[in-house]
Length: 528
Image 1 (cartoon, rainbow, N blue to C red):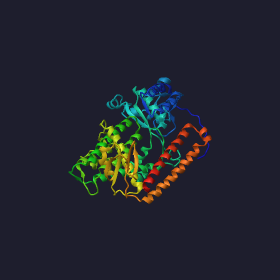
Image 2: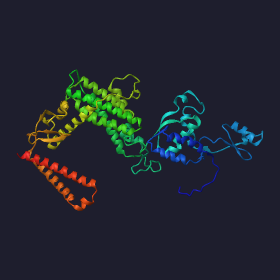
Image 3: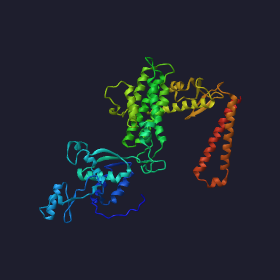
Image 4: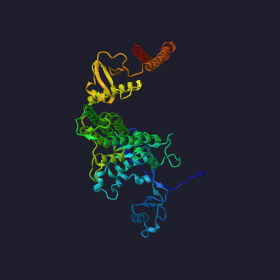
């Protein structure tokens, strides 16, 4: 209301805290009780090393009333029940005729955190029923997930209460999430009106879309600057999963022999899946949840959808062999399990439909895959295969050659990916792959590692248009080289610029010279 507030002195109740701080600091500093990220140990230590007595009085009309009772002639007693308070009052005053109505209980309530600090104990009825079966089984618990803004108010105080009342830590690990803020870094609040309506976001992007988008942008302990684009990315990924499922379930299956390209593809993806599952399990163990999600996200989007499904997909109107189809369904089910902790709704829905399930079965009760063997060499070989495929596709794009036009591929010298010719031929529509001493004249070439690959162009391109394009590129590269050389010939620049800047300019020079030589060679070949 913008009215000045006048402080009013009144009696408050405090709790001495040094004893609690002395108990609660060493376990965290010694990593008996671990914080993730560990940087928050410094915040925790700062609070506990500068501990102040806790004002537990709150002037509220609700809450746990402070169990203090004032005496008729001054003074007070503290007791668990009114009956015990009356007995203590009689002893303290020496007046055996005191009655309950002569005592006045404190009107203040206990601070909210004063009940919250008992949560790990009271959850299992450990206050009212000490040593019961549940608290003996569950205490201490495994993990606490919370925000870093209440490290002292809740986390530290639960640790204090655990050692004081149970003689042990309340949990073994604390994972701190980031705080969601608006685009300009402000904490979301009702007063600022900068918080989106979650139900509206879910209506627009889906529950899994909102959840996945937020988690992808939430490294442990780091704040998230909220943007609807995050939720849109989540929705797009949901669409990707759904469309991949529709594609696979739409294939016709026949009892035919498995093609060589499909056999290679399934062997490769089997290893990719096992390797990523191992990585995800490792990241879960380190509480790096956004990185675990990113690993599965890349596996599904890049490796499974963009590469594997393209490798095994049958030609239009043709069936897929049974072996490859069953393998693909098994891969899909494993991917759904890996995604389920992050995207529970779409994964449950698709898991129920990928195979026939029994009533009551759920993906929630399935075990995540781990300790599966994988072939690192095969994975590395496939990376080279993908580079070759990308090189051929780039030539098609640059030369404007339609996919329906079959191409030949020449390999100068030994072919390091000879065993994967069937995969390359399928994805690039190749008529042949052959080893040559030297590439054909006018062929478009590219390098993968130290191996040169070339695509003979023949009559597939418009020579006049290609010459124009190459000559324009040559002119640009020559101009660029001239600007670099001008800089390097300037004595002032060379004498004053840092060594790494000079090195970068020399690299630009070498790259430009290499490109110019290649362009001149291509132009000469086309003019013959």
